[in-house]
Figure 1 (spheres, each protein chain N blue to C red):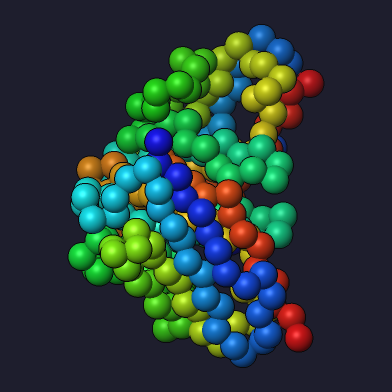
Figure 2 (cartoon, rainbow over the protein chains, first blue to last red):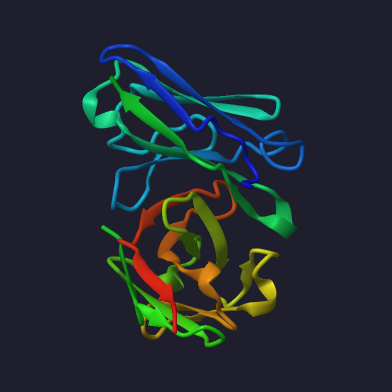
Length: 111
Length: 121
């Protein structure tokens, strides 16, 4: 069982928006603004899409946005495109003992 | 452009030690500011953080693996390494090395391509 809870799957049609949630605790997501999101296509290494809750690395489309409220972080993808179909993982810093925790991953299907 | 490349045996026998090395190019581990990390992914499963190390040699490990895990760094070769002892089939996974942006961010911005390690006799 993963430390952070994500829905196993979400889906949307091209052009629509989808939001993936990531629920943690007061020991990780709830206390640190170090939530990151990763996109992983089959057979490929993960790629960071969002870091520090809502910052986008250079080269990541602004269709991807992140937010956080309490112990739940969210990744929103607007204007869905076929190439967005992938697995998405959230990640949070969890303090000086546990350090890093990941979510179980969410499979995004573009219908 | 920072690049990371994992290397090591793809097959390890149960009870033996899994050893992997990550070679970094396009940037120096010694420059500081980053944690150099290991992350694994069991077949068809999610990501699991294994641990990371700073260029000084300070290492931090997943508490669930700590008793079997050694992470080291060789700044002269711009490499860092992972040793996981007493492996079982449950350690079969794709192992990734990655760069963590470190304190102030804790996100993984560069990844290796990953290497599959199978534990089997």
